[in-house]
Image (cartoon, rainbow, N blue to C red; front, side, top):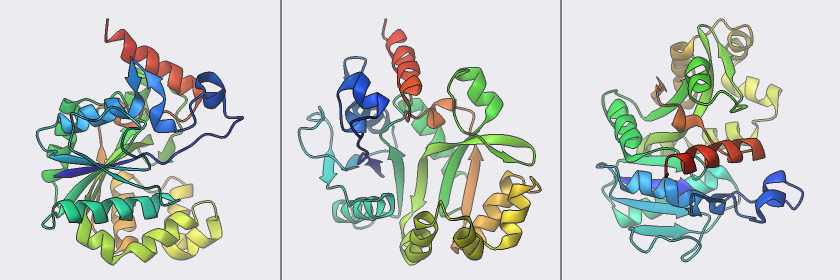
Length: 257
């Protein structure tokens, strides 16, 4: 199985992370003696399920990957087109690919064991898209000062993970709908028209639990989605803010001693 790493994010000059590090490309933030994406790449390629990597948004030489099977794809300008470009590259590498792992470049605390566990949890379920979330108590127990955003649902509050398993054929078949939803992610009324007001109402008033959200989302997207309440907080500990970078960097480097 191939894994796609999305690595197209860049910082503006006034971003606290750029001011702190002087690094413009998010994936190349330094920690533990190497770049952030290198830690993610090591975890993925160390998994017994991952045969190769496709990095979208960087080029050869941007980070140390000479010892890994890595293909590079230029940044396409937005997350949907980046994923599609990555999938096209996967199909060139392995025309028979059916499933692919999609991972962001900013969760450097994942390990090969965490990746293995995620893949096995996905393969044990029948679905076209598998998405990991982490419950607030799990997240706060591991990273009490993470400052993550949690989505409230009936039965708990959840942080979204940054690793997914995708079945390539159904995603291709429904890409325009996915593109519409992601393109309208800040427009409530547009999303309501696409998802249905019942979905939005039940979400806002916490009448919907995790599995109902998955079922309703699957129906809208015309594919079978599975949401995993994942026990490893590292899959959701991404680096978006300066305090998160410092927290993750300290945690990672403490384990190197």
